[in-house]
Image 1 (cartoon, rainbow, N blue to C red):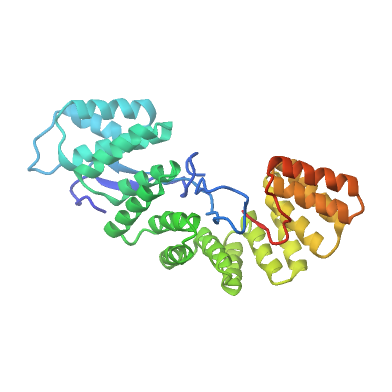
Image 2: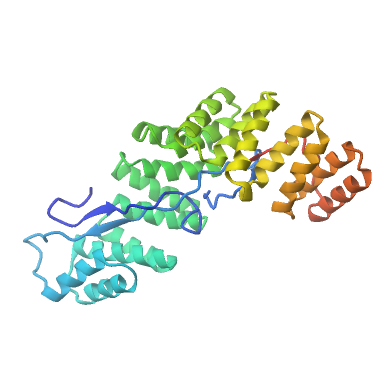
Length: 350
């Protein structure tokens, strides 16, 4: 911790996760669900963890504060919502808090503003808290807001400074790795996720994300090893099955690929457009065109404006003998995206 033992320390709140989207950072990075394999990889979705400062005995060298100002500081730290914000406001307005104590108050008010979705005020308060005393948790939380705004340069700077101040927190590496992954800086992403795994060996999302980076680099053996471990640690996550299916498909093992896509669909049927698309393409590769049409149709139902899906279904319909239906799908795809092309080498990660 950055604060001395006899001053307010910052503790992480329980009950929240980590990562990069605007709605509590939900791929992420946003980082977009259902992208093509050739596009930036997705980080495992989650939400930003927020640390809360708690008051402790003030330094004897600091000026004494009134009972009211001390109580406002405690309420600011321990309450939530408008009650906490009002107490924080009153504590700041009292003018009796200085240095680390004042930084703690700005920090805790930033958390409440962030919980309300008021990112601009949260940014201002985190910045003031950091000015008063740089702290890795404040930098991490501010970095999460920059990431949600897609200001990845500033987010990287904050995560990196948080790591410099506290190199033992896996969350900081995790979120920085998410950004490297989204920027296609796969070597740097792998390095950060490897550090997460060293610090937190049971972190399933780190294995998932590192496996995704290995997939993009064509390191299929390492990708499979990481995705296997992600599935062992979190067998209810559809994304790991979907992405492992892509690796099996690359290796020509369509039977295993189809099995993994099927499990991804079972686990998250309402969010399975990518898995239906991938399984449909696998059926197409083994010339089971009727099943390909069915799966690509379901993918189109879940994502009706995706040109690649319509084009792929058009090819499958033509191969299955439905020439008119196939041509209609291809025409519809070209209307959405005039540059759409045959999806022979496309696949989709979650």
